Image (tube, rainbow, N blue to C red; front, side):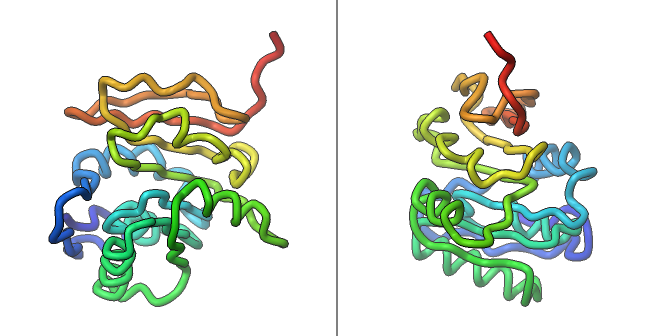
Length: 187
């Protein structure tokens, strides 16, 4: 794994040494960031199910103002911290432990909380997309975008709260589903 573009381009990231963590491939990450590129400069980004931290570190490399990494596995949190240190990133990020659902709830309830412009979720492939998305819109800025990486054969919901599915891109066994914060049309 390596950082694809930006100020940290070419930096190699440490990979997990245990089973159960499926890092986003360089190809899928490149596709993701080709779409997100116009939104990254100065953005506040959430990397949920952070794993190695590759998504959030790529966002930092490409000009994100701040990245919050959420990861439940303590080994993966240590890996995120190691990758940030290896890349020389010293500021502009926070690593949060615990489940994404609990972390989202805690963030939304924090006084003075600033919503995210971009949220990227790369949950385990056995996670239900609808459950993964639940409550995510509460931490997102108006017009913000959420990207869900999932198994290609999964069908994520058309909407979740204020999130409306706007695009899907398949890449190998993975699919990126893009949601935008908006208002659902009246029925």
